[in-house]
Image (cartoon, rainbow, N blue to C red; front, side):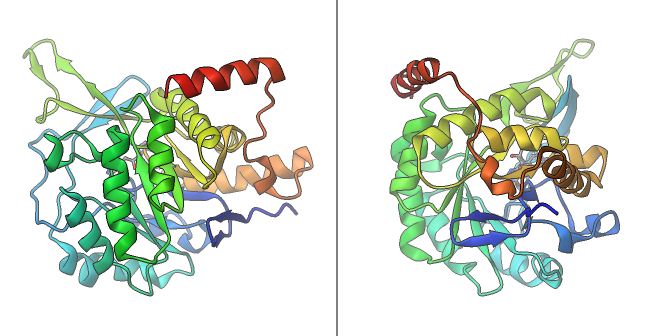
Length: 316
Ligand SMILES: Cc1cc2nc3c(=O)[nH]c(=O)nc-3n(C[C@H](O)[C@H](O)[C@H](O)COP(=O)(O)O)c2cc1C
């Protein structure tokens, strides 16, 4: 039987499959055995209480969906007492996702949530930075470095940093996260999009724009995952449009050590389990003894890959 365990920094996960933040709730335990997942990533929490964005907050898109939920939050204390405990009942590492408005706020929140029962912190730095006119931290290398190093100074917990595909210089941004002390990169969040109702002529989202997720963004997320893999030495967790085991394997071949699955679980809450089973079948069929050996094993023509690498470095 294939060995599905993978390493993300100094953490060993029983398999590479976990939910993406915000696309999973404790109620999924009715559809899945949460003790079989690689990790449990919880919806982002922000230190400040927030109501979230104006409604409507989601709408359909071809091969995906748009959302502008806006991270509603009742603050860290409420989160620690009420949201986190049900996830801790399972024999699965719990990853807390933090979102904040400034680098200092990020650092303070990450310090506060560095509890022994929390296995890792995921810093969702794809959110707006209020010190930079609301441009997401992860859209620039300098603001990425500032936020991640501020967090790193305040916690010894494993630190995963979630980047955004709405950035052009991804290699430089991934480098900045690594240099600032990230233990892993999650690549990545949603792609900024918009949709208009042609009868009312109004945007379909109350916030006008929102994040596109689902199969529509898979090739984009896969490309970013591969670019990050080539740019840094820390592990990459691939995310974006994964719906089945084959998609997950594509991300591993592109360079991911593990994967997160978001939108696909809305359609079928049993998706994560089906992906784990599919990975096992793939490994058994293909004679892969250890799934972790797939990471980065996409076969590239040598000359093409060198040329591509130069291009990737120039463009980011
Ligand atoms: C409804 C919804 C809510 C989300 N909430 C969060 C969140 O709180 N924090 C975060 O880092 N990402 C959030 N995301 C982004 C997902 O974690 C994931 O990065 C993105 O959807 C791409 O993966 P997918 O195509 O598999 O859904 C959210 C996505 C959706 C669709």
